[in-house]
Picture 1 (tube, rainbow, N blue to C red):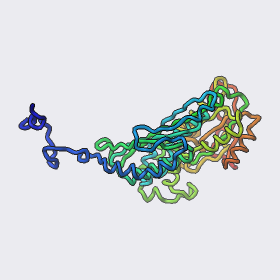
Picture 2 (picture 1 turned 30 degrees about the vertical axis):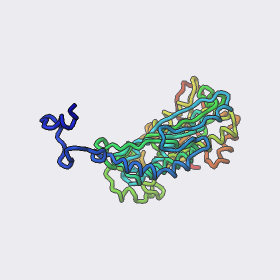
Picture 3 (picture 1 turned 180 degrees about the horizontal axis):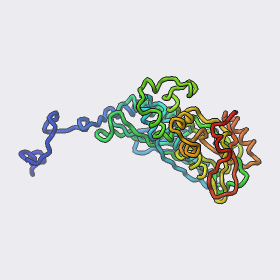
Length: 380
């Protein structure tokens, strides 16, 4: 039998190899993938991963799958697993321009954990996917450190992930992130939009800024064409922060304060909305059942300086702003009016500032606004 090497000798149709390669072998490293650097990156993140572990974690990273015991679910009447997946979007471009990668991991966890929290679920474990043009262990460790911090804030374990090097597909300094979160909720305690009633109260929880949405617009009007130096200049209109600081403020993770309220005030919260892409207008309606609207009173909460700054730079009117950015509300709880004071007290106990931002009225599952023109008029 003739081996493949012999068979190819003298062929004129064989592919032409670049001059820097020898005739006999092309390694994975020569193709642009450094497996040794990948192993170094895994070693660099081990401590971060271990710091997120809960007692239910079985085994360690490095296996083919992450293991997590759900024995505690046997005490629930009807346990439901809740899953969510998301990314950080073009906020990553700001991080790459700034050379600051330690906060976008928090954003990644927040986008997933806050979503599954909307059902009343407790996040249990998290997995990440890091796609990168050229793997550098230090840069990946910085990103994963943020993911680990986010997991600690959410109370979930980082049980696994993937680092994929994509030479020829992505630029060497480019990367993208995806996250996957799984939680559990007991069906009798699940938050249900169909339980929302006319007269219920809207309680808003403050955002930390733009969170992880609207960055294609924010970058276009605030970042494109400016230098690294200009990105770092302190700006009076941002309360003394730079654009870099304001734009890279990590998304708030609401799991612990909201879960504390759900435990302390069972049945008081009917439904809740995580305000992400689409703003208040296109997220609060997702927490409504048939036959009701959410009426939001503009001017009843503070708008972050960065949101005002971006909206002014883009010349956005109120309606467009409210369906693009969170405008200062990262989470909205829909609460039994007889127990609104109780919920606010429990949130205050958890260290949260809250705002009564509206009410539930008869309608068709939509968001409407009162006090139009007053969005930026909060006086405290």
